[in-house]
Length: 346
Image 1 (cartoon, rainbow, N blue to C red):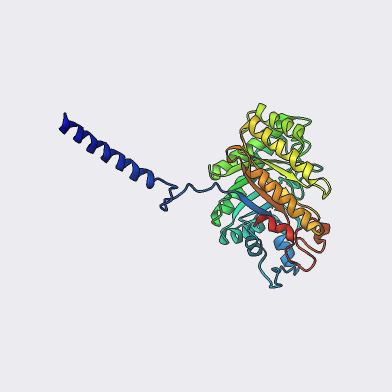
Image 2 (tube, one colour):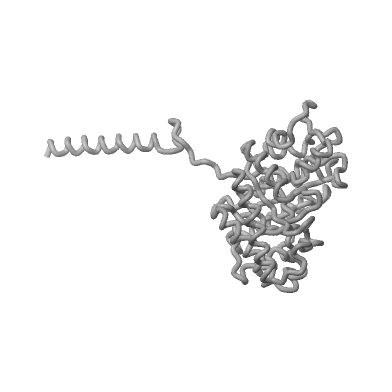
């Protein structure tokens, strides 16, 4: 009995010591073991105008007044991603395939991830206009489906050939009432709109299954709008990976809008189990301090979403200054330097 008890104590001690060693060397322990990497959170900017601005002689400067290439400057402020719009046959070639590829390669060479935003138009597509490209104007639904697939595939293959596979692809821009009007107008025929989204989704996945497909609406605070569109897509068996939102509050109401947007984001996750990216934010350039508070808050709210479903926030054309193209919601001052608004991304 005495020898058995001694042996038992020795064995127990060995087991205890082994377990202690294992606990001390597990991942994340204080002995220097590795911790799981935090999920990637996109902090980005849409810079679709950049090459056109450069061609017009526009320069960009850091806060010390040193001329700096724009994407590098944005990276220096804490951004890690770039968003680029694509038009089908645009005047002057700006935002056409070649222009987009050139900008995307620049972004990739800086280590920035890329989002591609298909407008399926020759110019702006937004809640007030979703005009078919001139070359597609006479196409019926079946031919439009083919055109959407082929255009999406062609642009993404051109990017891939140049060494850029986008992290995200937007199928349509601010499609509050569908796209490619009148054929794809959601309030007239949700099924038509859904079939067009499906073709964009399929083309993106044909290029690379890892590409995350976004369906994007404006007014991120408008829950009724989002339920209507995404219920419509779901009921028509459309797949998508991420819900994209635009959010452009006024300096006087940004806190209320952010609260409404958070409620909408949480509802979208509960209802569809999809991730969220705020693909566009902005505020008047001369409200920089307020804008910084707005963006800091919406970044924090997006990061707080359950199961890391909040995946990023993008500023729309922050590099615009001196009322470029009549746009005043950039985040650079009139001397071409970043304002305090961009400190939110640091």
